[in-house]
Image (cartoon, rainbow, N blue to C red; front, side):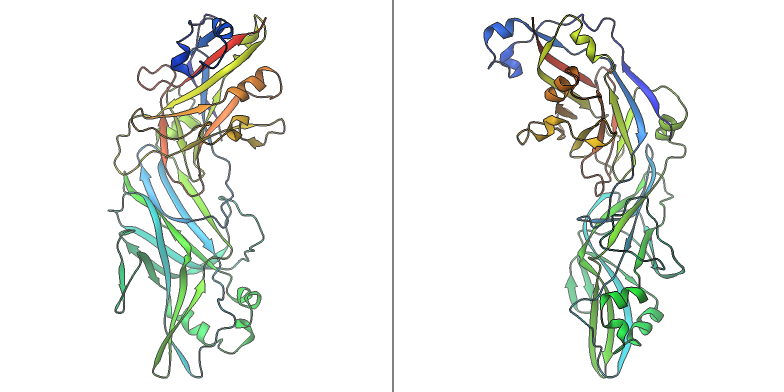
Length: 424
């Protein structure tokens, strides 16, 4: 997991600072006129960026579960799979006096998608042979052992906005995967037995499912879809005499997403592994890559005495997207590290709503963060680091990707703008 540093802008003389802008234009007109006279403006701070692999993310029991694969020309092949329990609902099931299994179907209800839905996806379903626990924390690199024999497979075009017809009913958009008949028969055979008396007994017998997507092999194609596991179910269809019935096992218990990334042959791989200097860096959701931003010479602003940071604005410019289907994230987050090396939000994150920033403005193709208090704390030695990491907000459920410009780019400049007052 190497880190390749990209120098986005070196300055000759950090203290060769530009004159102040009009306070009316910067929102600083609330300061006394005497302070305005001493205010200094700078947008030439040295910025160094590094593309690094994201740490594993906690992905158990999130709002949506992601399944699918996409093959992006810049970010390579990303694949999302799910491990999930299928638990009893409504107490001990009773299938009747002479039940006969008809079929068993895994029904996955769409909640969204990212990418190209015009390319066929393949999903494989297998049975877990290792226990999951609802009270355990699971991360995106976690795997569970599964039975080598598939329970079912399907190839389909994602249709997250198309209702489907089951029997004579039209129901909400979903992927339906018919599983092996032997599973349906084996469950019906448990009718009236203690295995179905409680979830503890049931989960000892049937530990859950692995729902995995086959990696997308077609370049520039593929999608990752999100599914609502509160609405999804493992549905057993059977009949008792002449009466058709069904029983739905819930998927809303222990569950987690697992993510895989293959950057082979991509510019991301070059950034991570080869040491080749480039002016671009990369950000990707679902535990892909993130951008480390360093300001190595900020302490030089104190060379001539203490300063008061009135405003510190980090502007991130997105590279113009040239690939259809794959939009940029709607929101980014900026995180730092504390003395123990743990991820923390900058203190500015806890200001009033809308102050910290991070939202995407499509007109300017930019994200802006306000980090004045964090920078001040670093200059005052209250914070140990001036390094930050830019990540996708909601990365566990957001597959979006972003290529950043540099501090030396004419049209995609990444810069830190400081307004500060010299204290004498």
